[in-house]
Length: 143
Length: 180
Image (cartoon, rainbow over all chains, first blue to last red; front, top):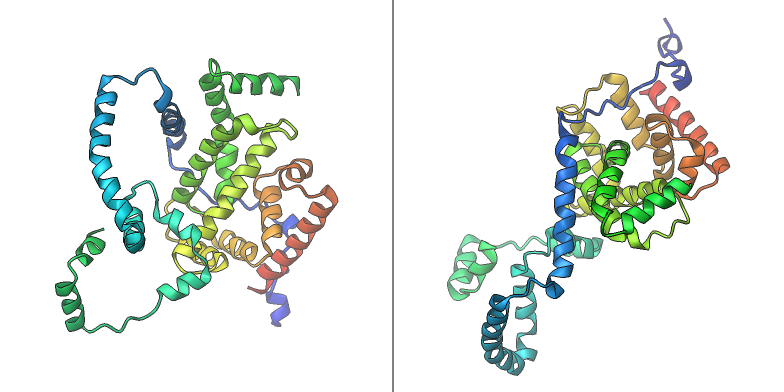
């Protein structure tokens, strides 16, 4: 039998309709509306909260405390600003919880990713040394 | 059309907004789910993208000018969200979105939410070999069974252009499936 005979020409219109084959988990849509409404109200309150009437004396007291804490820090921060610029930025990214990996990744281009793939060629000993001499590293690792 | 205008008013009025939005969700969650699923392929990612899509729809409702239909506007947001999602997912994994798509198709065999035989896998692989625009047009026409006029409103391409895209897509898919 020749190869051509075995190979049947495929024609979409001659075939019965091919379904996508995707299955939706049972009850998926039952919870979807709820989930989305929750997300929306969350976003909403984020925007409104500052101006809402719910500002009570607790918020006022908290604001005073925060201000009291911030003023000395701010003064200190200002005087060291230029030299600590990078450290502050890194800490900000590391601790700011509403910046997701996805957000950061969306700012990177191919070149950045290439750069990240650099093989550091570190020996275990040198890592140990680095860890001993640089206590700040622990923070990066645990994050 | 008048009905839609009324509905949009309800969506924008803070008093009726929640009820109206629930109605919108009920009507569009299934078609938009299917639309996103044909693009991102697995259920969990679809769930993410679908939720983000509706959150964005809600957020930008007041910017919706009513120049296009609510239907095509939402499909447009969903399409953009799905394509952006794939680009970012590829980036995080250090691969192109084409490679990601091929990988995801290979993973379909183990996916409990995919029930496909050999021809369905072949069809998915054939679709993945097409240029991006032809992929979208084929999926929207063949799987989602949207009308050319509707696809035209969503993608902003003329009906003639879409018919040509679909025709080319079908030819390439048939050749692919015949050979493989």
